[in-house]
Image 1 (cartoon, one colour):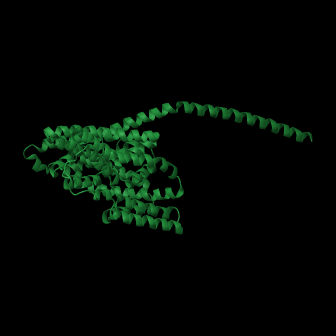
Image 2 (cartoon, rainbow, N blue to C red; image 1 turned 90 degrees about the vertical axis):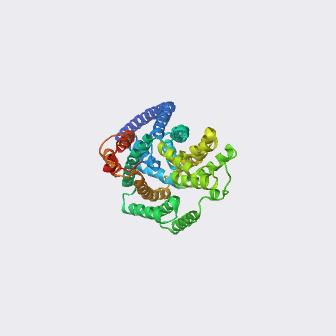
Length: 443
């Protein structure tokens, strides 16, 4: 028995040593957790500063409408690694399914990923505010000075640069989101559906999510029934999405109050799917054709100013508000247009954080990801003719693509270089004989 007692005694000693070590480890872990909790406010504050600085910079320097999402990908996902490529594509899927301003919603998504709910709110505000103040200043200046040739030249140079940034973003995201044969097939079909059917972006993405559930998760009868329901809803939504807008009166003249301006632009932001370009189309139809708040020439001038304004293209709403009711009208119109985007995203993101890890939701996102790439590719093709009017613009595009793929030059520097080249080109083309010889097209 003595050997057995000796073995038992040694086991008790080892067990006691293990328990003491575990106690020390627990105490150490608790101390670390307490230390982390004590540092959390500081860490959170640093993240919020990072979010504010990043989005103020993007809001003040990013041009190109839909291409702004490419700049966000290059700056915040590729360079700063706020989110993975897969999470970024998830964000694109979400914002493209919702009504509202997609670039602003993506900014809220990235701010939320970096700094929680308040980070999302801060990111969205810091992205929108620079564009509002720039648009307001340009509108006031335009009222007395008009658009100068230098500004038109800068816009010409910005076009191919932002197109190149957009192209590289789609390429990089596509390698991650459409890396398999089924995903590539979904991307191609989504692009074809966007071009050739009336489904719209939200309908295409909903169907792609259903296909993702079937291909990557389950083909049980319940899943098939759910996908068929989604397909039916997508078709119904294609028939008519904006009942609130279509019910507007044919003509009502200049609005009588700021509340009327705010109510109209809130409807635009809350019921229009398809991003800034679609919302501007609705705005033009209503503001010019039905309400007669602006003449067609005034609205076209507003679109030109929107091209000179960094940040979301939908800031044209501030121009319309200014023309109708001055600075107060501009403030109300811009706030009402973007408010639905903030409400929707900040309400959805906490829920999305919980359900995105569920198996069927991950499969749906896996189907939506490549569909987003197909939709972005279609947008890229549509933008190309407007950004590349002549051979010199194509040269700028190729040079920017090379710089993005084979160097570490930042997107902001490339945008500034494009603006400078555009101004120089406008100066050179004004010399007699040079314009015809070089084949330049007037910006």
